[in-house]
Image 1 (spheres, rainbow, N blue to C red):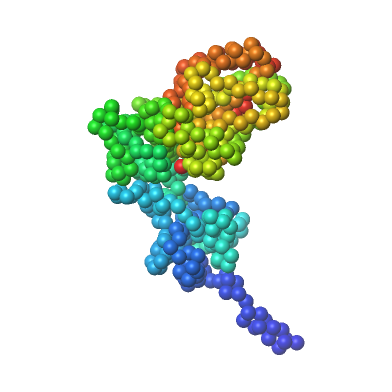
Image 2 (cartoon, rainbow, N blue to C red):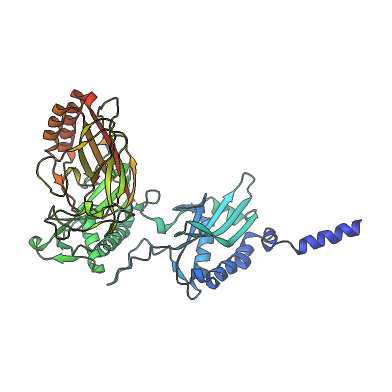
Amino acid sequence: MRLLLLVCLVSISAFAPASAASHQADLESWIARDLTPYVTQQLSSLPRFRNEPIRFVVLADSNPQSSSNSLAMSIRDRLSEAAAEEPGLKIVWHRDVSVASKSDNIDCTKNKVHYYIGVELVEDRSGLISVDVRALDMEDQSWVAGFSRSWRGYPSATQERQLRQLKVDNSFRGRRDAPFEESQFDLLAAQLAHKLGCGLLRQTAGEYSLSESVQESGGMTESAMLELVSNNLADFHAVKFSKTAGDANAVIEGKAHQIDNELYQYWVTITPSRANSDLPTIRASAYVHVHEKYSTTTLIPTIHTPMVRSDDRFVGVMRVVEMQDGRLCQAPPNSPRGSRVFDSAYSFSAIDCYALEVAPSSDSILFFLNHQLNYGLVRLSGRSCEARTDARVARMHEQLHFPLPLDSEMSGSWAAANGWQLNPGKDTYYVIATTDAKAARALSQHIQQLPNRCSAAMRSGLEGRRLEQWMEHFAVIAKRWQQSIDWQVISVENIY
């Protein structure tokens, strides 16, 4: 019986998988002798990885992380460096993603990734750690079948210390959870310029021309940051700079939003000078952490404004929908181009078009507004771009569609918002509805005070104290006709 049991144990151990045997090796040996050769062999031998952009990341709950412990980061780095030595592999390096390449031809593909090779490290209460390495196909949003390696065991004393050290992944620098530091303003400017440059190259409406305006300034002021961004754009040859302001057809501006204590979100925007221009507005943003406040920079706190409305909520839900007839989103007749519309990701195409959709439960008169991020509140009108307030009549339970103006930055998801904000952190759309003719006249006269927007170009709207006064007056109107006035708000999360 003992002899038979021994034979069975020997047989089982002979056929045990290699991954199970690797559990008995220390982590360092497993990385060097098993994991690294496996990953490089898989990437170099499988045709699907050949010449495809690949990026190594640290995962947590299967999601890429902007920061993690030093042990997970070091494993990620070792695998990335080993893969970079293999011919035919296109590895996106984490150390150069945050810095724009200074060359005549800006590389807008270096941040595009087809595959993530993820390292996920988990420690349980007993101190046992698990290391799992998998490949994620970003286009299919699925794990690559058969690509997997795992290790379980206890770390060494050195690895234990690495587990307790936090490290930021530079490839995510500029996100809210991995902001730039105040000593990295040059990298911040380079990243913003890279995003702007790629946005400029993607659009096809025409060429932008910015006026040259170099100002001597020290510290993190608007003019200093804009000068750094402009210099990077000049290096990329992504935009034309005019000697005089009269020859320019666009302006570049920057604003810093104070998010939380010493965390700021810095925005740079290139806006066409003409309100009816077919050139889209190009924007880029990144987060930055500073210990001293922007004493000379525009600070924009988020302020919620209370606004009453009918208890019936007769507007219902407002949402963004895709229109089947792309001609509904044509530019105004006096625009140089009259057929530019959105694609399914809210970027330009020749067939798709998006609109705001509402279906009120009562016959209503509707007004549509847009709070443009960094550009204030405007009223929206149709392609006729008429000076008077544009009101739409909606019948009970019938869907009404209000085509959105052409805007290349509408590339993102949308969600319902809670209420009115003086300085929202996202592009925001409002619908105001009333069932009373007198209330409609009062609303029309008040909304008439807002600048009109009917094209792809951003239009300077009401901001600051002027907007606050406008909202205070609107609150009075809403309170007077409270039971016959309703409104809804949605915000758009832009992706750059």
